[in-house]
Image 1 (cartoon, rainbow, N blue to C red):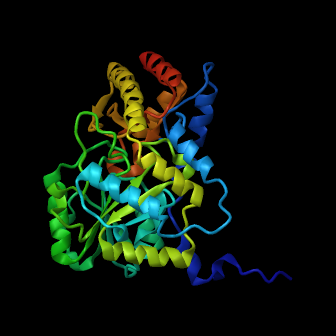
Image 2 (cartoon, rainbow, N blue to C red):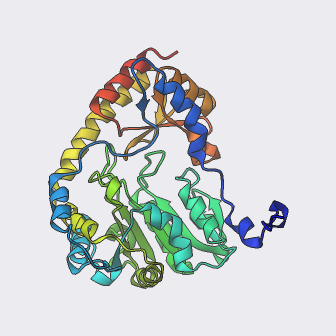
Length: 377
């Protein structure tokens, strides 16, 4: 007789582990439909880079390929200096090596930050009303309560353990001005609440200039109470390397480092070397921006000509569009012409009549998308 535990008698941890259904699974049949198009699929659903990783980064990775020992959780001295130097050069913020830590991409941080900080179960984690789903998942993994809001300062601070900001925003491409960021940071400091800002699209401003929470116009001359979360995936085509970092409040960084040591969350040594190469070279970032700008111009004109309204989308790698119909109707219509997009519902109830189109397709595929949009009915 089987001794397996019956589903009805599963232990308490099983309930704790329950997470929302992985949303992208719902898109599978539309992807199959788009692939059946005679010209093949144009996949604008996921923002994964398609252009080559810069040579300077590949060279740095190869030079560090002989890596028999464990890497440092805090990063090599060269990487910590590169991070401090980049933050100073890019934001005018003066940090020390104790205020930065490399991470395994930025999604790791988004998913684990409430847990790594040791937030009390039941405390609220404030996340943007329209947001990348992993903010919600990260709160749930820690036993916290995700609360979607665009006004963190309007909440009862006694119940809040962490505030997430995201500018430029995924999925909308909205950029929060310095005064709005400053208001949230000031509120957080007044109540002892950490403010974490996901800034992985910061280098991709189009008609608005994004600002970091580490910029003096937001946090003054101190990073107390703030963390900036960054990724090299978009700016440097390093999604396959899993390369990111956190910078800001020294006490918070120390807590993250200690937890990461225990958990063995180590950025591989060769990847750390590649990050040094990427952070020290601004030329490839400028070149990639030009590529994305050209794709954006072509796609933006095409979706507008096809009758879509485009909202926000002033920065980042996405167009936030609507035909004023349920988002799944739009997804279906686009799949019929071989174009796959992300339904706005994935990012919150407020996105129920929008879709997100990524700029991360080759020039040829973006041109094909523009041509197919012209035939959309």
